[in-house]
Amino acid sequence: MKLLLAEDEKRMAKALIELLRLEKYDVDHVEDGVSALDAIESGIYDVVVLDVMMPGMNGFKVAQEARRKGIKTPILMLTAKSELDDKVEGLDSGADDYLTKPFMSKELLARLRALCRRNIDTPDGTLAFGDISLNMNSASLTCTSNGQSVRLGEKELRILEYMIANGDQILTREQLALKIWGFESDAEYNNVEVYMSFTRKKLNFIGSKTMIKAVRGIGYELRYENVQ
Image (cartoon, rainbow, N blue to C red; front, top):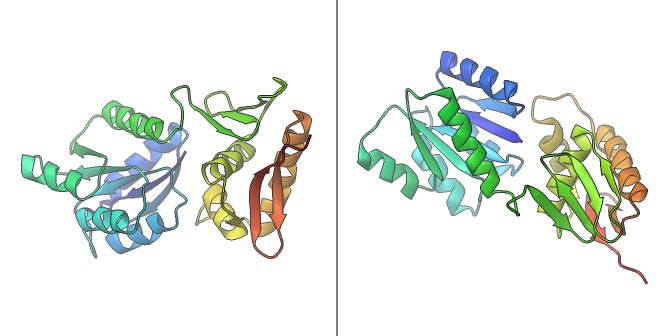
């Protein structure tokens, strides 16, 4: 899961980044509200941990603006305030959940797991498109027409997760590079092409008619071609 942490307090941010990476989250970090909103608008994150008190733009306004622009990424809001009115304001601004500092690590992780489960299409953690079923828990890809399965590598899993979630859209190479490798990565667009090739081979291996099509000069799209 790709997670954005928006937190300006350096010690808190460092501790959270270490905790979240130990739990296998792919974490990007920003320290102000304007940067947080810019990052959220990229659409590459599965979940956002958003502090209320930040320079530039507070968390309430960031969440409100993100929702106004139609962004549905789950947001967990953090604040030092425990008053009921502040919790209500956070939820009304568009946050999906609310956690008051100080908090226990276990509670934060449990709430994040709950938010991420809401963002998965099915209760058992699978995503479906055409004749393929992607199990996020076991990192396995199955062709539903013949039952053939294969295990995916991390990048292949994340590519297919992103493409299935945007099944009817063409995704640019830039979008894919940001989603899979992140803002701070030195990954180039040829990395996208290499892993697209790996992922296509996995689709071919299981005998799926779902294909990754290259759109010249733009990027890629997932297409199901049920040719009899």
